[in-house]
Image 1 (cartoon, rainbow, N blue to C red):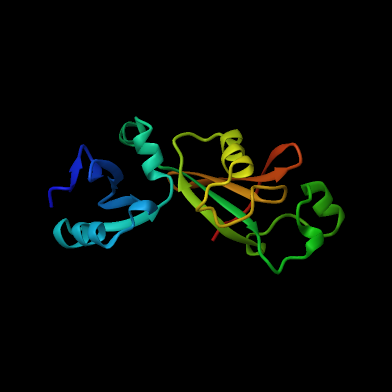
Image 2: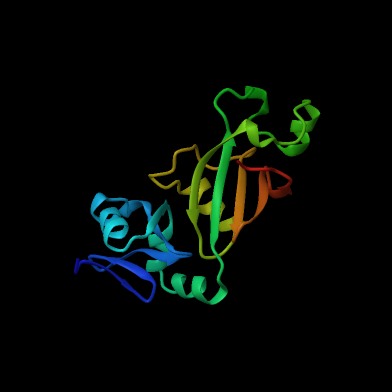
Length: 176
């Protein structure tokens, strides 16, 4: 199909960078999650497809693909927020207050994954700006707030940060 093709490892869909090749599969941006593309990739190219947010932004801002190729690194973020059934007194409090109230350290089973996407670089300030101040339309959770957990993933290694009243605190947390 002439409107869907690869150029230097980047999947081009009608002139737009829609995804990229990575370890024998295509990482496709969620805005291009369409039957036409998936059919082309699976039937003609025999490639598996993984859909993620943020791929188009990173590729269209220039240099995103080069960073993946040069460093061989995949950078993503996940945002975890307390589940609907969690106690109200556990929500929107600092780590210290959480422990004072007897809830202990944050546990993965208390949280729901509300966002996963790619980023070009790890900046908690940029995460705060994007999800705390200017919430994207496709974001499923509430604006980033105290008691949320931000996961920074590079390749397969994760680091977790609890949103505090003033900044972030790195914590031990196992995501699912």
